[in-house]
Amino acid sequence: MSFLKKIASALSPKGAEEGDALWVYVRCHRCGERIKTRVDLSYDLTPNYDDEGRVTSYFSRKVLIGSRGCFAPIEVKLTFDAQRRVSSREINGGQFISREEYEGDEAMRE
Ligand SMILES: [Zn+2]
Image 1: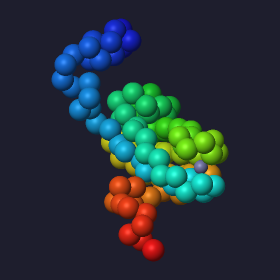
Image 2: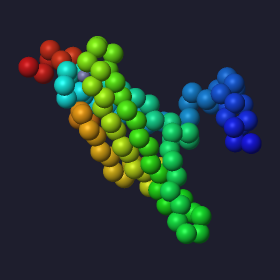
Image 3: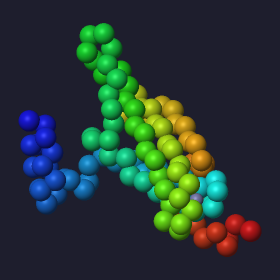
Image 4: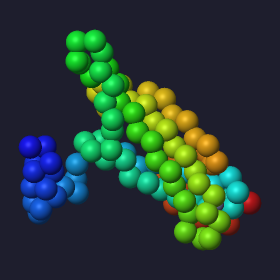
């Protein structure tokens, strides 16, 4: 049933794109490439349940690989509270950067 719902929302002209999403910006440790990824708060989170079946938190893991030919994987692990707000985050192979750092010109930071 939820699979069909997913299809329906993907086909609908509005809504599919404007769902709650989190953008994550990282920089590769090896080559310095900046990469961004979108975490869909409706579909990309894995819920954790307590003994009574209530959602206590969510988890999401992504592996990012840059497009400049370095191919070093960057692993991002995010934990969310029951309201789908980020409660902790971990990264291997890179570092988190802000959106400003992602979009900013490298040359301006010398
Ligand atoms: Zn790299």
